[in-house]
Length: 255
Image 1 (cartoon, rainbow, N blue to C red):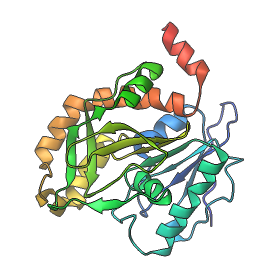
Image 2: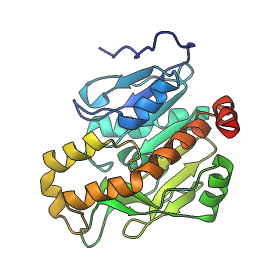
Image 3: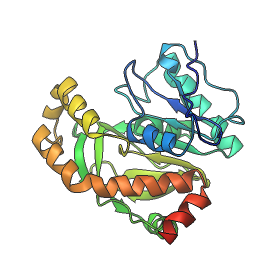
């Protein structure tokens, strides 16, 4: 059964945001909270467990595909289904946001490579983010600079597809943020991660902290206290522009 959208009583009715998750107990984290605060119901679906994806986004305000421990290169039917489905928001010019696996899926949909680091390195923890000239131009438009460090949990990266533009780069995995057209974005990092999610991931998947390049739990917690306030401000402003909410942007500018 497809979950019913989460409604928020007392708010003006808005179309739901499609939320695609990949594990039974996954949550949309801070992204979900910020969308709900803006009055958007969350239409949560898990194709891995049989939930269908809509044939059109005409009744949705946008779509977010989140991360997961699987690979965009895996042969599973639900992986191929999601990769193919990304053509819906791209063709309809609807807001799409891919986070980690969701970004890699968009890259695969557009014919780009998703790859493991040749030295087996991973990015797990906080790592530098370097905006490109295109990314700097967008940050001026958004009115907030890119975070200097962002949270990662991945061991695969992706190439920027033909026709897309790279907005931010990194070290071991150079493609960190891309834009396709005006409304589709792919982020290799995890701005949605809450403190509780970081604590849970570093316990449940503790074995991954031994991978080359990964940071230990203490360093990740220290990084969160140092870098997350900027990530939070950036995400809040990014979502306004992704959803094209000029009223919120104007109200913030007057504050």
